[in-house]
Image (cartoon, rainbow, N blue to C red; front, top):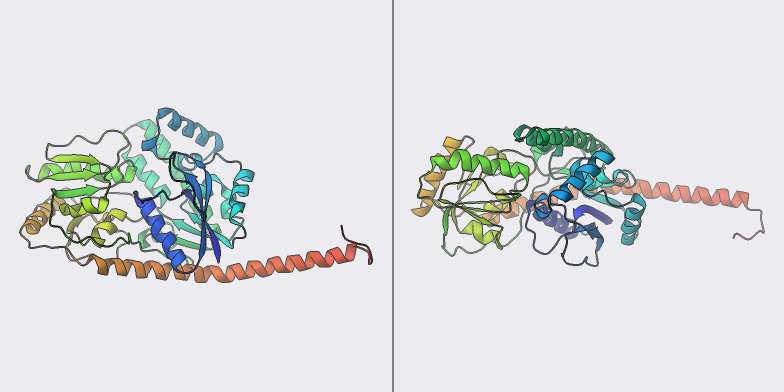
Length: 416
């Protein structure tokens, strides 16, 4: 089976964001199951050239943190002109004929894997012309609605509400047309209205890196890591800094890693913003305790998966546990700021005293991998008879065309 995996961005070396980590896990699993996969997407400026099994759709910066105000205004203008969500308008730069020609470089393909909503929203024909597997990384319209509620200006609130309305329409259309749907959690399956849909199979994700041996070096007591330029992540960070940190002792060392779109929030002197780190795995391991302070969004939190696969002690909100069926024993769950702060203080003290230790991250990783493998396998099993039916239909059409040609061309007359 040859599938064309269509995404906004091609992979670029070491995966850094949660989206990239999820993509790598999913792509690797398809290939483990014997699927021939060709990847198609845009490339970040200055990234590596496309590989042999990749189709380069052009160079493009699409993250808000990577562009200036003029580019963002151009995205808004294109979105309103085309009636698209801004997240899709960023990508809608190719004429459909040009995009089809580029995708044709893959040769004969059996179907598409539509990786997230942006490309099939920017180019609606993608979800209609081939049997498709849709991977819903988030419930995008609900994330946009949440961003509207948390927006700090009327203009941002208006834009997020517009985004939510258009994304809801796009999600319904793409899910309706897809032969198979994969969400990243059972909660997202329910939120998309697919709880009873037999073609929807939630995925479990694994970072898949070998667990580092514990060198015993702790440079901070509490660590947080994330892509803070993504609005749902920023909501959790702001809650942590504004509501939780003031309840913590001043002598606790807090390190926050990750990229911002704009300045980080104001914070006390014991909070250190270290920016994007070269080795997220090493940063997590350098924490006594990891804070998983998710307060919104949908989809799965890859920083949660990474923390659990390292076996690190953690305090998590319920939202941080989406896509996790089995919570490790060295993890505490708290939803309100007082409970979260109290759990952190106790966990740090226990970690420093050796009363709480690293768990079996390898066992957690194996469980996630087995669940991912089972869901991908089931999706491919659902897709296979549809591909066979379509191939049979094309064969019948070809045979009919041949019979019609024989009838209209007189005997003895050569075909041109």
